[in-house]
Figure: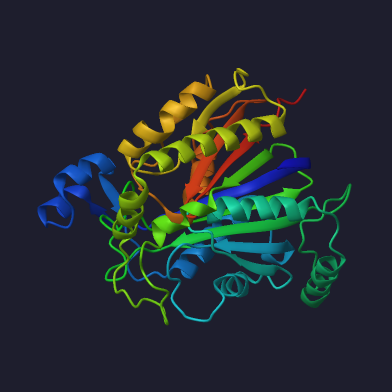
Length: 372
């Protein structure tokens, strides 16, 4: 997706719980095999305990809003993405998040695209911001300002008031429904929430989202369905076992078709995102490509070689200490870019992501050029 106007990244937040589960303990307690732990490459995983995913999302969102100095009443769109159970049935987590934040002028929308949900939400939020004015949202925001008796939308003295979209993600991978070490191949799962606040127009000093390209291979949905019949109610199988459903696919098709598709789709989203951003693959201003937070063996075998063929910039793995964060990998990578001040003026970074379905995404971000 080529963005017709720059979309500013006003603020980004990553909420991690204090408690951790170490691979050493998991191996000692026979909750994961020693060989599997080595291939995963995660020494520890964050564990949320009794904090629910929507509550985690609220904490991350409050940090993002506070970091940008933007009141919740100024948010016109709230997109929440999740992979696993959010705590209630037939209930809308994004509406809860908006309610708790006080984002009463926002339209809350849920995104369920498994692990690529955060990237999908970011793309939809950027598209919405660049699609034109939303008169009804502006009316709602004006009503909120009048009700509260003060200006609350971050309006600047000069120029139009910025419009804000908030993207949150949150997942908690708790037993007995989900085994963070052994429910899947190629990833160990950590609990976390993320939030990113986008604005149009971008403000001076904002990182800018330049492009976001997504591609999918729907025939691979079988890898997470296997031979299981369609259930009549949630969780008829008490513990999620993606290893089992993937074995069904592999017995029928082998591993090579998936590997081939994965390579092709990584190439598609990277080259497409670069083209949309107006960049050549060897542009020296591209500093790095941030990898999804998958197992080290998976990155070494399936991601790093492909990126090495496409880019002169290095692929970086910043997820070792957290593991896979469900829908939150891409935004967590963005948080690392900001917290590490990893981009200099006028430099670019790529953020990679993928999820069951299968879907792949690549975002291109740019640091503002030096003033003067």
